[in-house]
Length: 326
Ligand code: XMP
Image (cartoon, rainbow, N blue to C red; front, side, top):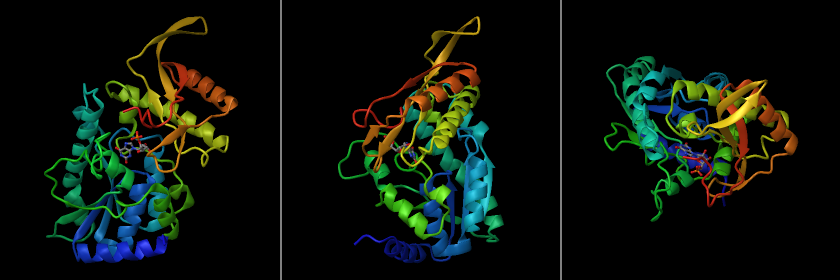
């Protein structure tokens, strides 16, 4: 019989046995999975855990603030913030192929953790020691779709599974590896994480980087970040947050179309809205966003985001399409 508190007890004793008195780090992405994984490990080994929040430059608006507020306040976990955006964006220059983007981001994540190690040790007051373990919020569907399941094909290299380099110095701890999202949420609730955190819509580790179709640049990221914030704000206002699993906003950065605004011709890019419903992200249906919400989002994005002159709707289920475009 499935029961959140059994799973917690079981994982806590496993983690304790494996970790001993070693130091552990966990990367927080702002999402549910890494937050629940961190809270679980914190319950097991307390202060031996230090969380690291890496700003890779491809975060959504307000993401860093949310981690600082919601997470640290609720759990009291030690948090170190690293701004690595220059480093990530430099490495991604000129890259357009989705799997290469994912591999580069996964590799950079690990290298950034390795670099942060000294600071982690210092803040943990564990001088002379090394960080031995890295916590990852990998879920069962991530494992399957990255080709780690039973004979499954590699559909996408999730940065926390197939996207990692092979020469990692850390041992991985993945306490959610056999779980689905709804189970992870139940565990988060049982662990006392705030509702706003437990019910956050999924957001991929590689962030807005895999929602820009084409090369990732700072300018394009800024544009997409604004459009995404508007779409999320309007869906929240309409009370749709729990009906929708997530709604990626995707910038077709290399596509241009002619528009007119005021008396002027524009030649801008479209964004795609991809609202979906799902149980576990393995399959998904496109969600029928109400027309008035669509209209408001479209008007606001085209008015407020200079360079975007069209908003289009993705009405494809998974399969045949995946949720994210890359
Ligand atoms: P796809 O596009 O594969 O997405 O249908 C399934 C779910 O996974 C999320 N996603 C990721 N999450 N790291 C993550 O932590 C990743 O690299 C990644 N790629 C996709 C996606 O947002 C959806 O919820």
